Image (cartoon, rainbow over all chains, first blue to last red; front, top):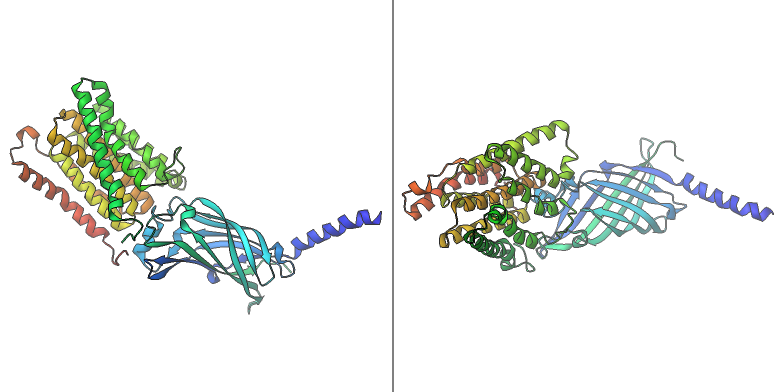
Length: 192
Length: 279
């Protein structure tokens, strides 16, 4: 009899505790960057950075599997340190930012430890949604001098732009995009 | 510039060869229909001819084209047919009819942008579109020289392709190139066979309709300067001398037309020329 009641009660407690203790963080855009590298004519890699993004994530060192992240990138904020090239990348030849102004990533599950693992989720780029896996490494967490609790992670992923319908100038510009994510978040007020 | 996987010849196929060949074939069909006295068919097909020929270029450039349309560029393939056919509205309401057809069909193409516009923006852009469309059709209605007017248009189109390509989008520049080749094909055909004047003007006005739609797309989706586009299209306002009273030798008429149509375009090119090299 006790077993009949105890098991669901323990399970419920475990579920509640996982959502209670997984701290929610708001991404700090000033200390976050998303960039990609793409091959240029086989000679070098061109780096393009997105300056505008927002989002939040949830992270609990005790229960890393419950980690989740949701990021929205302003596609029009891209910056390759070359104005004419920026305009070209934003044009219908590539990202078509007038039609697809946002790039979003929403995680679906995380596999790994509290400091390192693989975060899988749905990436919506150029109007196409595909499952993408990010290799994640935790950089650190703790109180900053102003008593805000912060944590930070780096992530990398490789994808093919042609999978997302971005297939112009293949050959001259590589198909492979190496994505790098540098993320820092501030824990929401009132969280443990 | 484009690497190994896209050779210049492969680029020329959709941009020049396909539209030129289709324009020649379709032009010949219209000529035959005209000879057979099928006036109703010619009346409807002539303004749509360039659109048909241009589609052959379009599908080779926008290779992920889908039907039913899924994205703005898919809509761009279909919607120019509406203003092209709108040149057949009665003369006394043509300016308004063409303007409305152009603005409404482009609104369909620009759904994602229209959805984010404020009411004030929407009204001002609609008025601007109606004005540009109305003036363009009025100016082309005044023309009576089937030798010079298409040459002038082809020159403006060629420059607009360069301006768009340098400004931001190579695929849109190629699409305008396809339009040039289509109209060029008809102009060449008209040197060999004799179309009725009104048929040739309807075909040319159909090209104006498609061109305006692609220019609008380049401005709204690829941020090509509206001032540069308007500037290079200014020669459309030139009223060329009536063909019957055009006494200049063909080479002189051709070079004068080319030069007058080229000058504002060069200024437009200077306006958009990037401070840094593009690649």
